[in-house]
Length: 197
Image (tube, rainbow, N blue to C red):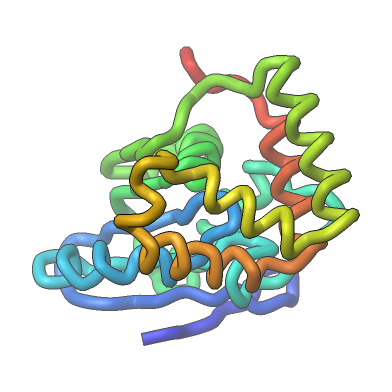
């Protein structure tokens, strides 16, 4: 069931499914809560599953020109406070993992566990930071071409013909991400700190 709450006077969208111990799902870059549909279907049989649209993604607002991982973590905390939930496990995919790590730094007493799913605790290398800046330029030039190519590149070339439905689904979600949301996330990821200690 889709719900909303306010963070900085703007709406944050999330789903809330199932009962039991709480698991929070944080999607990756160009994703939304929808990317977790199959996962929610399985996990919600045993857990209460909260899947949040991070700032600038899905139906959640943008909050400026750059979305730091800390800002996104505070947005997640606003949702959990709205639901009056005190302890939970966070599972973060890619960018969602960066947000989960920032959450662990800011609000450690609220975490029962943290899972990084295809993510890392390391900051971007200088080369990766340059890639992010090139991506910003590509988004400004043509957001639709950028999102289509970015999603396609997430899949192994040999699997593209077997996973057409999955590629199409992820591309549809990515195309729903605004230009401002994409750029804000790119700057936030580029400037995030290393949390490998």
